Every structure is written in C-alpha cells, then in structure tokens.
Length: 205
Image (cartoon, rainbow, N blue to C red; front, top):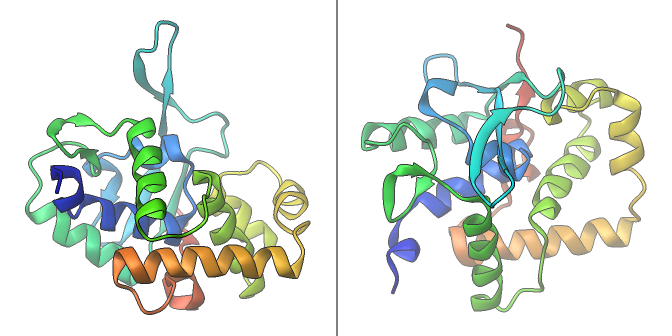
C-alpha cells in the first residue's frame, strides 16, 4: 500500500470538502493560519492555480466574495483540531510524501478517481463533491443568500441558478455515489451533509 493510502490526510481532506463545498484550489491552498480552532472557523483567502509553464502558485481568490470566513461543522472542526496537533506543515492538507509542500490539486483529483475505482463506484468530477454539498444544503433549508456566502458566490441568484436545475433523480444518484464513497472509504455510516449540524455556515467577522 502506498504512503498516500496510509496517510489519514485523505480522510480528513474529503470529509472537509463534503462539509464545506470548497473549490479544489481553495481546499488545497488552506494553511493552518486560516483555521481558528477556538472559534471553529476557516478563512478562505487564497486559491491554487497554475502559471505558464505549469508552476503551481497560491494567489488571491477569484472575486471579493471568494474571500470569506465560514463556521465549520463541529465534526469538521474537531477533525482539524486533532490533525493540527500532529502536523509539522504550514499547510492543512499537504503533499502526503512531502509535508513541507502544498497539496497539488491534480494529486487530489487522481486520489478521488483512484478511490472510486477501488470501491467500484461510478466516476465523479471533484466539482461533484461541491455540487452535492450545495444541493443538499439547499434541500436541508439553508437559504440561497447564506449558501452563496459559504460557497463564495457574488450573487445568491447565481447559486440558485447553478444548484437548483438538477432533477430529483440526478440529486439522488449523486447522493448515492457520494454516500457510498463515504461509507466504503471514510467509514462513515451517514454522509456528513445529511445532518444539518454537519453543514458549514457563513461566519460574521
């Protein structure tokens, strides 16, 4: 078994993604300075992107709305607190083989594909994890304005247009796949977004 499979970074990484709906570049760009363990909040102020030549750099979020602070679910905040106690890296989710190095989004995407293949689940795009979080947050009663703040959208209308066009069957299918992913890989009996207490909320700063 490879080191990346043994490292619990992936369990924490995917759990955090499914309870916050962060963009891939945002979650890979998180540093411990962004996490307030006492308040249980996470500040999103950077995203990873490739420059010409393929060099990966951390830069500002795409829009003013993209720079935001969210209140983490209790379960997610506790996972990060525990992870921080044993971390020697400035990055919350670092390269599994090189703790001093940030996590390449391409590595995270390949890990997702690998896990889905190993568990016999249909293929998903990484954005489908964000999409699943958003659609279930809306279905659980989170209002569009609040959700747009969590996701970093400029307008609530964009959030509604983007995440309410899917049919019930499409949403159920995505839920089944992601639910299976959590059960088979993370050992979670229930998808974190199925409980209102496990959904990130916007935080006032």
